[in-house]
Image (cartoon, rainbow, N blue to C red; front, side, top):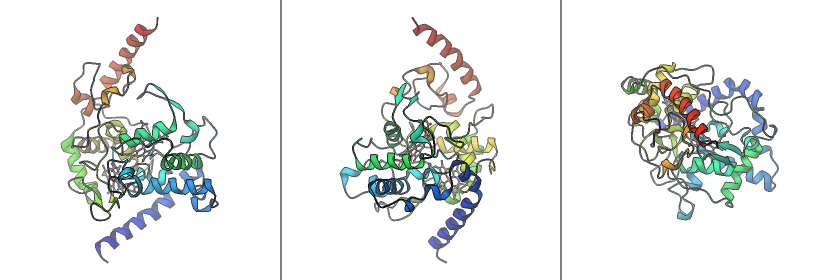
Length: 329
Ligand code: HEC
Ligand code: HEC
């Protein structure tokens, strides 16, 4: 077998495993067939749902930085939404979109306002995809929202679904150790994501074909304003979902390993988002692991990036108490 074929065989094997081990998860969120877009009729709704799923899996091919039509270059990197929202955004505890349509509009601390699902999509466009917002009336925005609507069809408005978001991560009570993290990385991640974190491209650079294994840092990665740039989020995602095929409740990494390897990945250079200081305008709402200024608690930037987070969380509680008191007239 040639190298790419072996890769494909491995991926197929991982996919098979995935389908088996995630069967109980699928039952809780709805059966796998429930998300089979090919069963929808060939009508306007069905076509939009199918396009939405296609955009999720192959974002780079439609709105990536290498697509022919320059006007369609909305993403700044060649990731797919499904690089993080795994299994076409249906995998439990990998930030699935199942239920997302039923839980928005919702209050969001980053904006300190009630945001729509469209605004949330554009949050990831500007951060995870290091790009720019999709116009609200674009076919692409409509397709994403319609796909989310389809995935949420069994969830009542305002309803909760087990497996939404990422599980909370209990960080070790210490600064993360990027040197230990580098060892974990070489042993457990580099075989797919590359020794230099650049991933493995599916085709030639410029071909808008994305990645077989996505990059974790460097110019084609998510930017510093992304949720994945927060150490507690990244630790949780990695512990729950990586190496590829890992399922919630059966982690392959300890908390210490996940924390350290996430810190190692986040210590590397990546695109920088403009105007991150506008995020979390209500400063007491700012998560302690948001790795950009201003830091109103006076703690050093290094601690906000690498911990220990326990003391920062305690600080934030008292800051919130004093700030909210001061603004209530
Ligand atoms: C680099 C990883 C990454 C990529 C790529 C990514 N996202 Fe996200 N996304 C996240 C994280 C992390 C969160 C949760 C962040 C939070 O709650 O603040 C999230 C949350 C969301 C949510 C809210 C889900 C919920 O249940 O509240 C939506 C909708 C979303 N992303 C859409 C998209 C779309 C559309 C794309 C592709 C255009 C995309 N994302 C690409 C990491 C990513
Ligand atoms: C067997 C190959 C493989 C291994 C090993 C692996 N990953 Fe991944 N990783 C992937 C693939 C493929 C994706 C895209 C998501 C998918 O296809 O489900 C991904 C996605 C990610 C993402 C989100 C997308 C992005 O580009 O930022 C992060 C973060 C990540 N992996 C970190 C790690 C870390 C850290 C390790 C080591 C502990 C690791 N991975 C090990 C294959 C792998």
